Image 1 (tube, rainbow, N blue to C red):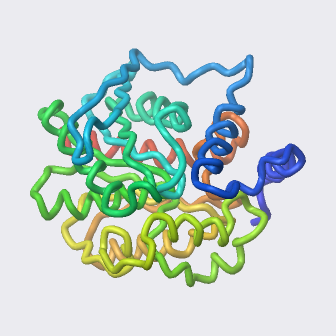
Image 2 (image 1 turned 60 degrees about the vertical axis):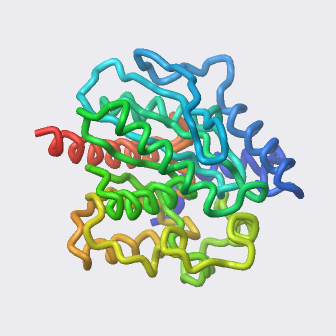
Length: 307
């Protein structure tokens, strides 16, 4: 397919407004730019996805107090999901992904616990996965009677996939994982990186910059180098990819890796879509539809675990 014309308009607008590229010098400058870009989507006519309640809190993390944000859905269907935001392990926070977390809670009927994990380069790997697991354990301990899911987008999806590996190894009863366009291959050697590495919001150069901050010198830790992970026995998965995403091929490959290991997996392809599409709520109809399909699949897994 061709790029969705609504996304063509979005990208042209971002380019015209000087919002691209995403990376702006230092990590701090890039964080400020990314946050401003995320918040700029919420103009005077912005209406948040309705939820019953949103509460900020702190839990004990491996590096000190760990901020979390808890969303309660209007229609509670009994599940709970720990959510990890995207942003290349370097940018993003609870506020940048607040609209996404509201949507996850509202469309799955699950309580959502968003974890504000520590960011690189100040806190490189394994800080992010350690905070993720602290959040996942807290979620399970706080809501022990609810089917437990983990979800994330982009870098957050990679953390969620890594958490599914750790949960298996710790016998933490994880019922589902939702991975929106995950990064699974630190070598960034797939064809889609070459084909989609320029002009579609996330660039190949930006991904290299993110990895250099997150795992300086590289790593063979399977919670980062997921293409070489033993995924047998991990929780059932929903993996969503996007046609014009540099990370498309490694997401597709992870789907096949899970299937080959006997893990139940639902693949939600995104024809005509770009990386990050789940955050463009209300701007691109096909993106909203793909996001809804992924969330419906996650809700089904949580419901099946609830019985």
